[in-house]
Length: 242
Ligand code: PRP
Ligand code: URA
Image 1 (cartoon, protein in one colour):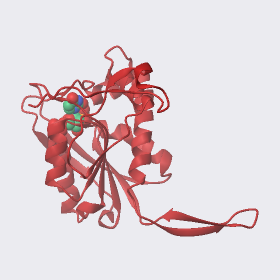
Image 2 (cartoon, protein in one colour):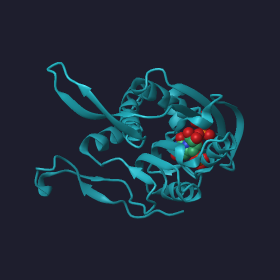
Image 3 (cartoon, protein in one colour):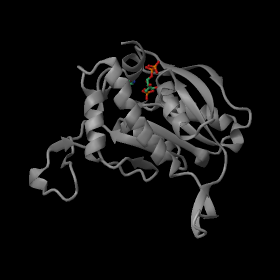
């Protein structure tokens, strides 16, 4: 269990002098280059502060989680390939732009990962979504695979794998093994995640060096029950049943 000291940084507009900015705990920095951590902006830190607060009720938890999920999806899309694409504007001028190339799909790790499907749909209208039901044993923290249903042609798609929590990394590792067994190349998988533990992120990113992780925050560590600390508790319970 690593509990590195919380990195503290002033957050706020760039142009504000550091002495006037509030201090907040920001993401742990990790060396794995296939992990992208969202910029630690004042917006993101305020949203995370809301969902980490044990006094935040379910309606607010859902609302603020959705805003972070949207940021993750938008950043995730930046890692997909594009090709040059020129168009003509209504004033008759040419604009040299780009467009996305390739087919994508989402795969959620149930139950908590399903909370991220709407954010993906809001950006990619009729995206196909597969499901993998993996549950962590409450005593041992070991993941168990119960069910999966994936698009037939998943091997030809870019896969946005969805799970808000990466603790030991066991569930996500198991999900990637399922995707690889269906022929999805590792470098066509993007794992979108809200909060990761440093040990989970390290294990996962080193086991699959060609896959990309996009996360909002790498936390301090894991507690004796393998919950992320400081974390936000049980994401699935807070989003769906609490
Ligand atoms: C949680 C979470 C991840 C997993 C993370 O799910 O959503 O899937 O635990 O832990 P790990 O990295 O140690 O595997 P859980 O099994 O509690 O199920 P839920 O989604 O139904 O809440
Ligand atoms: N799953 C969660 O929802 N939270 C944790 O802290 C760890 C696993």
